[in-house]
Length: 142
Image (cartoon, rainbow, N blue to C red; front, top):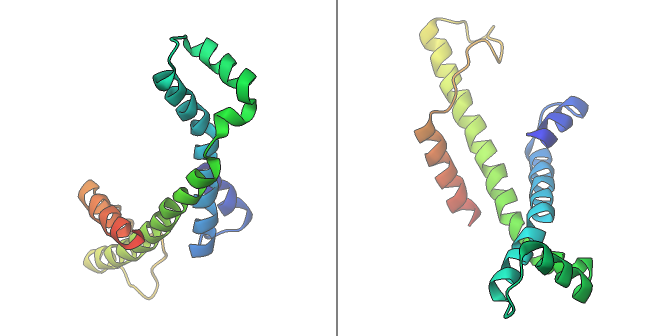
């Protein structure tokens, strides 16, 4: 949402291409922040000599440098592309669904559809709808 708000303030409406860029940036940031913790956790679990958190991190840095914390970064970034595709599909399906729902709600409310503004009648997703749309987008992306 952070990247989305910046993108919207600079460019405007977030389309498919923009959504792909935003999801890729979000995935990269997530991997860059969590991968060192994952690698540290793996080292803690597999080490033969029991050390504390800080001692393990120091040994990792001394033996292999900063790269020890980012081992496997490229495969993780490549695997996050699936989430990028899924998020883009989800946003597209959600926008189409909400547009249909909003037009239906506007018609029921008696709003003239020809003069209706986009935000005049606003219907959101229920938890069940979000679940099913997420499931469909996951199936398509996979």
